Length: 527
RNA sequence: GGGGCAUUAGCUCAGUCGGUUAGAGCAGCGGACUCAUAAUCCGUCGGUCGCGGGUUCAAGUCCCGCAUGCCCUACCA
Image (cartoon, rainbow, N blue to C red; front, side, top):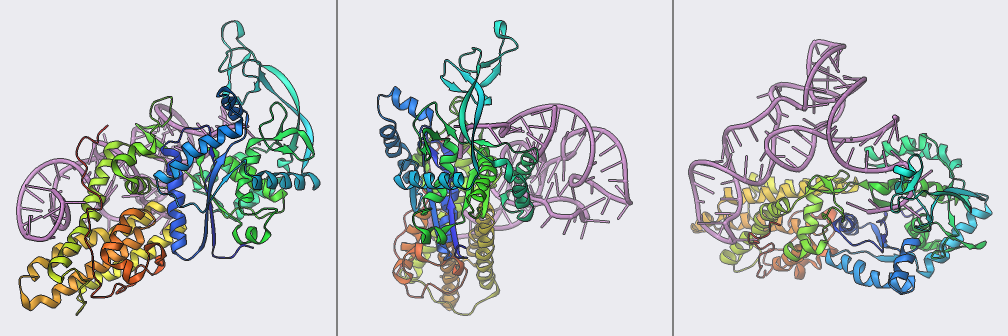
């Protein structure tokens, strides 16, 4: 059993041949927010991401570019994928590549165990083969022929008839796990989330599972089957195992015991691999199944799933260059109900940036720090008698922190942010109602002025901590300007479950200047 | 063919176990205020809950049918 406070989170590994777009970045940001939150909550968090580098397509593009497949993958990892993580400030603890020795060795051990325990057998794989493509075609690339080939199945690329060929393959007896999988979904309703995803998975498994072909002989860019080196491992079987090989499966039992089982964040398109095949593999190997498999939705652009071919694919740096990484992170986490599809538009991004980040949060920080500077020589004011309006802010902060923590644990990132944002809005309202600028004109009201600004400052301190997993750059700047860095230590070390406690930032703490956290962006942002 | 999800205000979305007058943000309109990034705050306008049936004292919510869109149906976040 893993340590009860262990929180091991994974993303799908990037297929290196893809071009990074905001969909990849979306998954990473969601995982990163969860990981940062759990880290600051004191959990034993571990956040893994990486790349999937085997398979025929990669071999082919590498060959076309005149390099060995490993060299091709190296290039893409360094030029595309690691830079993507930097662009959006991803704080992953590890980065696994399916070409890492630790992975290849772990896959071999896992396969050997399944083979030794009788879960694998040699069989005949029969499928439609395209001579033009020189490969077996998945159903998605098979279409009905027209004209002279009417009535036949043809290749979607070559429009030529396919041949029914057989290949010797090794098979995993996945069908044997059908009942155990159904029992799992029944006993642990939150194993697959959200509920819509669970429904699909259950319906699929109830239709009956086939055994899974797990080896190929038609190309050699993959992990050799340990007992038969003429076969390489099927790429999905290989790829899924990254989640265990990265934490010491078969190599470091203590580390593995500390981390496993995982929480998997996946796109809904690859839900089946994670919610059906993967738990079946783990059951066969005698390992625990994951804690949760959470499927998020798609980003829709103009009502359609984005894609390169429809020219709706957007590179993350197109957004971050103008709005910054914090705005990217905030926008996708706040505007989209996590687990559902969500619409992206430049207009909506721009509007939320302006209304919520610049006018809401950024301006709140500016006005409070400006008044502390103006009326209290740039120091945190003292709290005197607390009035109901002040108590309401203090209570809201505690409630927002508790709600957000609970919502994060349920993967409802958007709801967690909404709960915290209530404090942003309440503080803006509080300041307007209390009119500290009017209090400042009356020396008799000095204590009241001090209390109001102390309350607002403490609210900013709570916001900086609660929002740091989402907008780490802006909150770090605010943290420094508040003087909290010197008084309380690094922002990333602040316990997030105590963020709603009150009076943490000592009166008298010296504060600094704060440049606009989210500067206004002039109007040519519409694209 | 089989299956999942969605359809609620101009836009993006909430709406729990069926229960009072269907909510929020943005946009629009009117006002207040000046500490602040022309910002903030208050008020206000705005809905045939996709369509048609049914169950019920009561339906956005449950059931049946239909329409439209997205997705899965064994290698794209």
